Image (cartoon, rainbow, N blue to C red; front, side):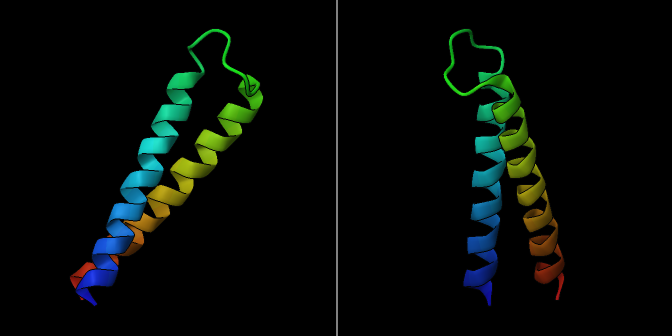
Length: 62
């Protein structure tokens, strides 16, 4: 059970880091994906990472 919690925690941190990278890419000029796509991708990744982090915290309390 501990390894599953660790894996979920690392995956949620990775998703949040990629979301931050996509959000920062919005400020860079000349980045290929349109800003609308980057915003959608960043919000989806941040939402998924946040939910996974909450689930991991709840599972680790048991």
